[in-house]
Length: 155
Image 1 (cartoon, helix red, strand yellow):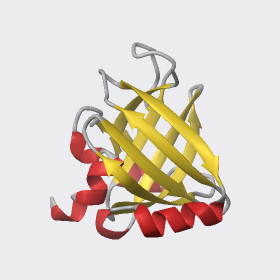
Image 2 (cartoon, rainbow, N blue to C red):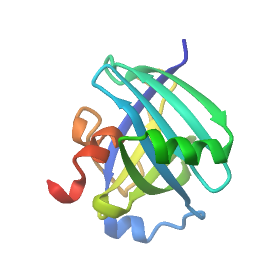
Image 3 (cartoon, rainbow, N blue to C red):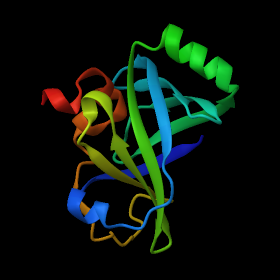
């Protein structure tokens, strides 16, 4: 079973602004099903689309199945079946032999910047960049599914 092992952190806005970063990629992400034990989402960029199924979290791990679908289908599913959505620009930053995915949210989540790191196992050591601050892995408000229903601006 494919497993996602991920930790999530807030980002210092001032330090992040100083980072030499690649071009970000805009993601539109909608949720067809969003429950504590499982989610089904559609993610669309200008060049790709994915359907992803995620199971309940156990610690920082959970099952994850992701499949590429045609972009046109992704846009139609997003428009016709998603009950909530988020928009963000993602930057992939290579730091100390790990890829950090930094999401700069837009819309009602504007002002929120979150960094995620995927690990091979739960106790894998890693080095945090200086722009990474507080860990929010276990705070469900910071999941994209939660942000799609209760946006950052409403906190």
